[in-house]
Length: 272
Image: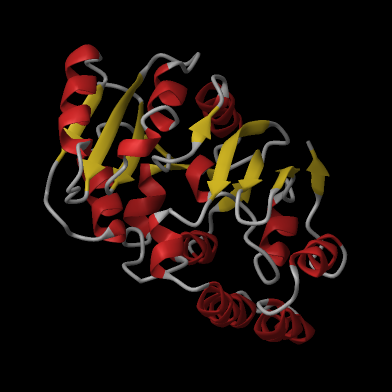
């Protein structure tokens, strides 16, 4: 019975078999299983997953058909054997010591239910590559939830107990990660970002997310969720300004976005 379950959902992931799979299978922590939910892929993904599972017994493939990202993620967590769940997007990459570092942090901090970390963001749309360094401590992360995404979902790791207590990952069209973290905080769990680079998150126009949601729509959705964060966590009322600013941010040039992120938005970033 593995202690850790890595859960990935994938839809038509054929171009990205060189990212998530080798990153997870090369982890220094060995006590884990890799649950991959194929969300109705129509390319060669199912065949390639079967081949990968034959080569490595840690891989377990679930094929429920096309049920949607959030339902697929919840199915993966539900079927996972581990008490600790590590999320991993199929088109991103985890560094070898990610699981070992995050599990050690959870073991040392029993009141923490969810951890992330620093990560390299590769934005192919804007031609940017930088290390994003979100706040590390719970109180700072809670405040940051009102103005930015304080953790990359693709490197988030949480106790399965948290998922069960809050009723699973919210089944919504967007920002299910931020809503899940909000529910965890409301349930009394603490969140942390160990200050170590855990992996790489890629932003590219060919991803399912960017094909599905326009950027301006994403910013409007983010504004609504961040206003919900301010309201439900009873943060200072002036922080609604961050949500309101999302409506104009969507139309700023890339260079202006970069400046706004690093000044008014408070995003700590280091170019690489």
